[in-house]
Length: 151
Ligand SMILES: CC(C)(COP(=O)(O)OP(=O)(O)OC[C@H]1O[C@@H](n2cnc3c(N)ncnc32)[C@H](O)[C@@H]1OP(=O)(O)O)[C@@H](O)C(=O)NCCC(=O)NCCS
Image (cartoon, rainbow, N blue to C red; front, side):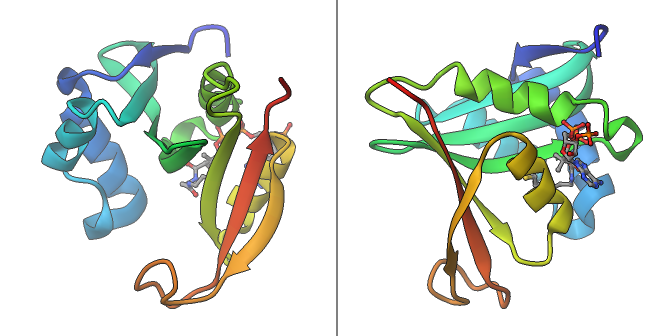
């Protein structure tokens, strides 16, 4: 979409992001304060997608691991799905890859078929299944998807 751009997330985005989270995940969505904690933490990258920086329709939060980037959150407003906004946000992280951190990882529930198709479209490969309770308290299996940059 030519009218949507990617911006570095700022504290000013936190209420719009929390609203988007509420619309997508209900009470389990990220709170404004949780979003603030990512913004002010050097271990995370936060990008938002919007018509302008104050009109946000999607966002991505990524943790910098020792040798990879781990996508913690990636959500696009349902009204804006299938317009390649999620792909634009992923592309932004692909541009951050280097020899120190050459891969992107995302853990996705086995039931989230849309996310599986989306990640495959973006050249991620499903590497392994993480059984319940090994990674978190979720009851469902998690798939580990990875994207490898070439250096
Ligand atoms: C997953 C999500 C981020 C995708 O964002 P998006 O901007 O709608 O995705 P894109 O338009 O970039 O999709 C790129 C490709 O992914 C696949 N895809 C995306 N949504 C799909 C759907 N509902 N059904 C089937 N394939 C889908 C398609 O191949 C699509 O390309 P195409 O439209 O040319 O066929 C969005 O659906 C979302 O926010 N879901 C809820 C939160 C979530 O599950 N987050 C985890 C993300 S991994």
